[in-house]
Structure formats: structure tokens, C-alpha cells
Image 1: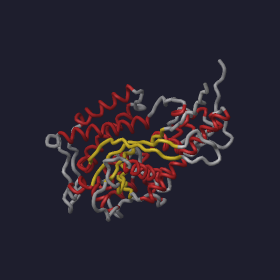
Image 2: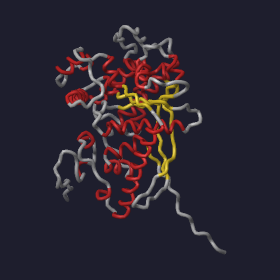
Image 3: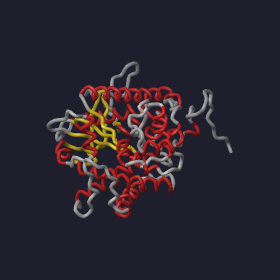
Image 4: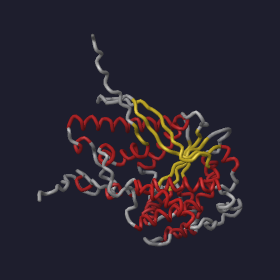
Amino acid sequence: MQLEVKRPDHIVPSYSLTGDLLSYLRCPLRYRYENGSSLPPSRPVQQWFGEFLHGSLELAFHFWNEHRDTYPLPWPCTPREWREPAPDWADNDIGRFADIVETSLRQQGKQARNADARNSGYHRLAVAINELGQHLFPLIQLTEKKVIGTRQVQAEQVALRCSNYEVHGVIDVLTNVTLGQADRTNYIRACIANRCPDLRGEYEVVVDYKGAHRPLISEDYWEQGEWQIQTYAWLRSRQPDSLPVAAGILIYINELTPGNKEMENLRNGISRNLTDVLPEPGSNDEQIIRMWRPGNDTEQLSLRFRLQRAIRVIPVTAESIQRALQAFDNVVRLAEEDIIEEAQLGNILQAWSSCYDDEDTCSACDFRHFCPRPAGVREGYLPSTPTAP
């Protein structure tokens, strides 16, 4: 009796857009330790805030959608007058959603770095619901929609372990119906119409949230954010219930309540002409930014300007989608090449490069103490090694 030779396993690795691909671009070595080795960070601050924000906003939306008459959001202003609507939901209303999400994250070993970070997360959530929610919630057709697809990965000089990979993510979806039914003073509707004036017929707009400031246009994060939206658009278009995706929105939540880091980034962008959203010349916003010093109350900035900074509309075309997909295909190829190189060398530090120009990433990394090249150090730096007792 002749037995067939066992076929090799067919591997289709799964990559999350934010948790894997963007994480790899931020620092390949940190990505390897946190994902390939299943070594979670001891203080997953960025991960905590992102998931806390997504989960709490989802619960708040569903609660508002079921109780619109009981818990109305502030009405938008008239077209001729932009007024600052007072927050309509009390802190204890918002706290109910946040507590549920925080408890769930704590059970997964994810929590804020300290009390100040936790309080900041709660405050930013409250501002997002009361000031952004009035414009966003009435437009949402689908919330936390999971999207998934499969792509080919092309091997170049290294034989890879796979020929395809899976990419997935989670988005909110707006449609031409919800946008058309919205009040004309809805600021998100106005932003989409201004950025994409030729939209007609049936279409969708995908939305994602960033617990971060608006990047400078010179930063890699600016381009990577566009890649993310374009890839979400491609993933969404492959689902049977979808309409053509005409645009995407990134919402930078931290811009609604800018802290010292956000204000420093804004002033740096203005002085170097590297930011796309500027205060109107001679406005109160311009004066506040010019006179700002660390610790000043930045919520004196007008709501209109803070919303302008928070909302980024990205048009979607077949060409822009293809460019983004090719960019992420290349990221997967690089990650897969690192996996092969590690298997051949048997050494993680030699196979995976570290990021040495992003101090924010390094300062929040648990592996920086034995990193071969953390941010802010000169070439030839030698990491510390533990001594024998």
C-alpha cells in the first residue's frame, strides 16, 4: 500500500490593520515582542485608551439611539450663527458606559497607567460624546462593523511561509441616507460636502477613531492614516451589504481636549507650515495658541476650531485604494521576511529592527531597557544587561 506524502501546512497569517500593520510600522521589534512572543506590555496605555474609547462610544451611541427623546444631544446651531452648545449629558450618565468598558478591559489585564491617565480618558470621552456626538451619532448607520479580506503577498528575494494573508479591522459606517437626513448645520456633513463636493447617488463613508493628536503632514502617521482609511474602504466594499465607499473619516479625539503635547504639536505645525488646519487670522483661537503656555486651559479654543482639528475627511478612489493596498502588502512582506530571518538566525534582535526616532513610542515600551537602539541615543549604544546575583 502506497501512502501519500503529507502536504505542508498552508499558512494564512492574520493581520489587524491597527494592532499589527500600523504597530509594525511604529516599531518592528516592539511588535515582535508584543505579538510574536505574546508578551503583553505591563502598562498597555495606548491600547487601553483606544479600546476604552471605542467601546464607550459604541455603548453611548446605542443608548442614545434607543432613548433619543429622553437623552437628546444638544441641537446644532443655525447656519448663520455658530454657538457653543453646553454639554447635555451628565458625567454620571457617561460614566455608566465607561465603567462597563473599563471593567471589561481590567479583566483582560488592560488598565490606565495611573489615576491621571484614567481621569483624562474619562474627560476626553465626555467631551467626545457631548461635543462630537451631536454631529456624529445621527449619521451612524452601522457601528463597530467588522471587516475582513484576503490579499496576496509577493515574495521577492526571500521565500516566505505564505502566499496570502488576512487583514481585518473594525469601523463605523455612515450612508448617503443618514447624511441626507441630517440637519444642514451638522458639522460632519459639512466637512464631507466641502472635501468631496461631487458626491451623488448611493454611497457610504467609513469612520475610525484615533486616541491621538492630528499628525503633522510631514509625519509618517499622516500618510499611514490615509492608508488605513483606504484599506478599510476596500474591506468594506467586499461585503455583500455595502454601498460604494466614497470617503473615510479619521477622528482625532485628543484634538477635542488638547493637552500640552497636542498644543506643542499644533504650534510646531503652524510655525513650520506643516499642519493643514490653522486658526483664522486675527481670531481668538490664534491669540490663545500664540499666548499658550504649558498648563493653560486649552478648552477655551472654540468648538469649531477643535472640531476642525479633530475631523479629517479622506476621499476614496480606485487609485487611492490601490496605492494603500500595495503599501500594506509591502508591510506584510517585510514582517514575513523578518519572521524567516529570525528562524534562520535564531536571534530576535538581529532579525527585527528597532525604531530609534520616536521617543513617544520608546518611552511607553517595556522592552526599551534591552533595546539595541532606543530613541534619543547615539550610535554604538549598548543596552544594559542584567548582572548575576
